[in-house]
Length: 144
Length: 92
Image 1 (cartoon, helix red, strand yellow):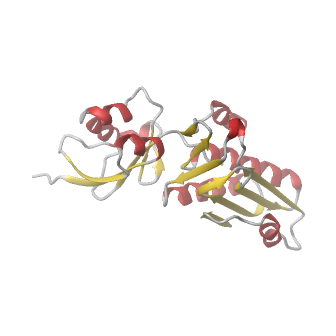
Image 2: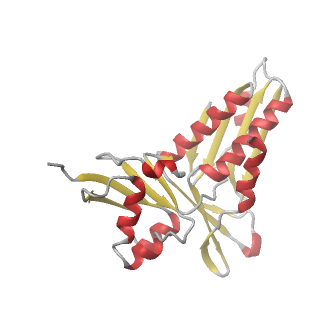
Image 3: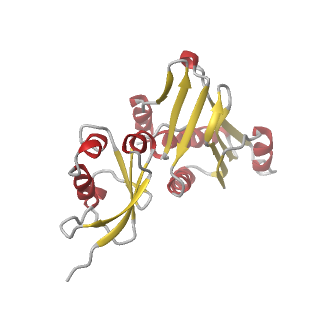
């Protein structure tokens, strides 16, 4: 299991190659990127060092209790990111696609509501903190 | 005789900006013993503290790096522990 918070970019192929081995039949990955809605040029990402790692580890642990996944990678970037940049990678490895897809979505859904990250958008109208979305909370219903 | 409990309080994102403060070490008065009471004690400072930490806001709290949801607010605050205040998270 790999959980990393970093300002540097990541390479999805490299990360997936590390998850792959002869017993793995399915690799699923999700990449979140900076969307340039309303002329957003930059996104600033803040986190709570210490709690972030703990929270992501716990989410990954919960996923592994629910599904038979052989490995998980979670990489989340922090700092100033340009429009179009990669923000987050969640990748899961499993024998079959169903479990890998489900576990990947589960981890992303809980990362959205439980991991202490905050986004600040910079655009033509200045900078403002992104509001949390109620749809992120309701996305958890399917796991209850 | 009870000694004052010293705790670390941290603020993030918009809450940090509003308060102009990222962290503070405070000594809690003896009548403040739970995580939830710490919020009210800070609100009682008035001014920007009352606004930023107001119960009208969807503020989140963490105690020892664990998100507080209801029952955790009743936990007793132990010395040298960490409490954090922040807006709902928006990562991913």
